[in-house]
Image (cartoon, rainbow, N blue to C red; front, side, top):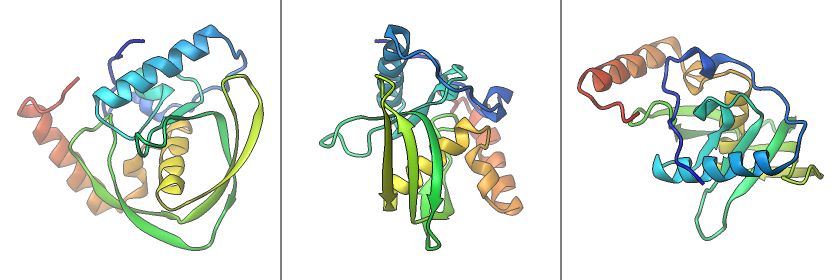
Length: 170
């Protein structure tokens, strides 16, 4: 288990679609362990393979330490509810920068676990927001893309200023 270097915005690897995991082996288990350690060190509640330069479709979430780690391999959104909600989001690849994003309040996903078994899950609220955020990242859609042009420009300016001040942690 290792804390890995996080790829930071605007690295083009954050805009590249991740590839499906085909081998469910020790290498995948090590990647997940590294993702957990890296996410906790960031700190964050979610992280993907692309966040650490691994272009594989793996999501790790820890919304509440009491509930434990959730691992989604090859997740796909299969259903999106009509109701939306707004939630403040940010990224481990852009620490310290947050904005309110509108997302579906409920969605269905299919995914595989570390053994390759297939699962379906309905998610609501914060879990639904986090899954959409991380699956977007797997698809090469950075969270800023969900903002208006004005909010995106302001967030980028704050990020540039933070990096010039030495605020970029990685």
